[in-house]
Amino acid sequence: MTDALHEAWRGVRGRPGRAVMSGIGIALGMATLVLVTGIPASGQADLDRRLTALGTDILVAQPSAASEDAPALPEHAAAMVRRIGPVEAASAVASLDARVRRTPLADPNDTAGIVALAATGDLLRTIRGRLASGAFLSSPGLPTVVLGAQSARWLGITRLDPARPAQITVGDTRLTVVGILAPMPLTPELEQSVLVDWDAALALGFDGHPSVVYLRTAESQVESVRDVLPATLSPELPGLVGVSRPSDALAAKRASQGTFSALFLGLAGVALAVGGIGIANTMIVGILERRREIGLRRALGARRKDIRRQFLTEAMLLSALGGIAGVIGGVVGTFGFATTRGWPLVVPLPALAGGLAGSVLVGALAGLYPAVRAARLPPTEALAT
Amino acid sequence: MSVLELAGAGKEYAGGVVALRDVDLTIGAGEDLAIVGPSGSGKSTLLHLMGTLDRPTTGKVHIAGEDATALGDDALSRLRSRWLGFVFQQSYLADRLTAVENVAVGLLYAATPRRHRRRRAEDALDRVGLGHRRDHLPHQLSGGERQRVGIARALVNQPALVLADEPTGALDQDTGRQVLALFRDLHAQGTTIALITHDPIVADTFSRRVEIRDGRITP
Image (tube, rainbow over all chains, first blue to last red; front, side):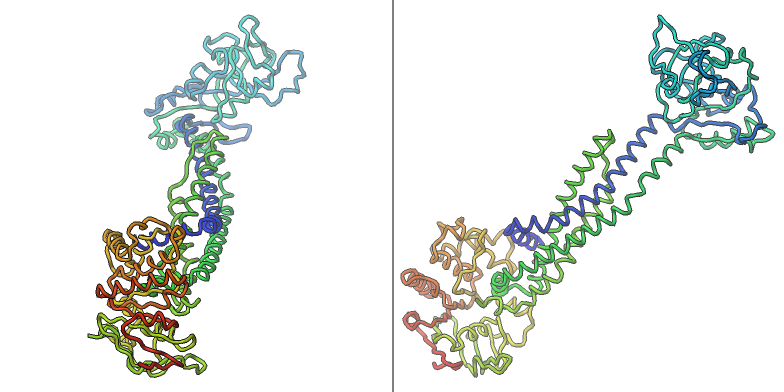
């Protein structure tokens, strides 16, 4: 075995230029394989990392019926939810039927789709939100408002100057902007809204019934909390309360982006096959040139199977070297791609191992015919000058 | 005991060309033998039959008492690796291997453990007087030195019979004489040698001569 590898290495080394040329095909195939599995895997790892950072333990409960007479959630919905054991935090928001404008002078029909929500001070902590600037709602009753990241852009208020506080108009009331939220990928609906102090909103004339409850639970209890939420919030009609997990939606969105890889996987297979044909060609040409070497080895006592094994091992080694070069190239390429996107580098080991084994197999298939031909060469013919 | 015995050996190629007919030839241990004949006389065919590189169409070939004509490829190959050493007109050295590595190739198929090969190859190189050139590559050696490396490769497995096919054919006269002198030395040390040549002067340096003409031998 060692001898076979040793002789194969000598054979490959004896024609370095040709070895490189014939190994390129396999290298390309393996590089493609690593890229098409490595890039989606790196993207997935990035998603996982971001989800971990964002938290997969947040649930959102709201009436599921879209009709006008959807049952309102109870006034103390947040407090009721907090009483469920594993719930760590809960906070409610309510949509206000009020237009949001930059100034009272702005066209009431030009609201840019910004939604006004009533919120309480504990919302930020519940959804692990962060502020881009200013403070969150901390003084119940004062006419204050916090802007979502998106709506802040739409309203043109991107920085807060404590000396000259900005004001916006919600309905017909002017409210002072005390904070701007940082982007929150898990709750895009909050990004596009303005959060009015709950008590101040009551003064605007809303009935005090929340429309959405955000809650955070122990990670391991997410499913069980999810099951009891509808009955907790609406004991009479639990079927009308829908519960969603924002992180699931984000994961599903990213999963659909990985579907192109089957096509490229096929491409990698084609490249490997073409690489194999290249190796077969090299080996066949090699036999013509190495007749005397074959004859000499036969005279020295090499059996047909020794010659067969030598050529087969050489083809497999050639292919394996090409495969290794391809893996290196593919990993470097994946690393480059992942780095430009700020993703972590992940190369799936099964794909790597399978690909390398595959390239050795391709080498064996490619080397089979040349090896059999080399072994069949009669010693006298091989030695004839 | 005879090292090699041809009994009524003949070779007829496809198409009816008879290269060799009814050859009886016995080589005893310790002999040195020259087979001489003009080109086309069947010398090479005879060497191929003696070396079991080809099979006779008639008659038998015995190597060390074993009927080579009855053996399959595996057994025949083992027979070659154990009993025979070949020296060709060209040395057929691998370009990228040093002299000692080239000689060690002669042990590759003889079930010699790796760790012993190099030392035995060095010993064989010493025997042909090239111990000081062991780490040179073929292109750093002269034609005569390359041929001596080839001889060392044939000797390295201590064969019962060394078959040499025009070993001086590609060398100038001086170098050829040195190689022949080496064969004489080796014979003096006990190696059995059968050499094929077209040159009667070369043949004269051997104690036994066999002439071959038109596929028949005349002892």
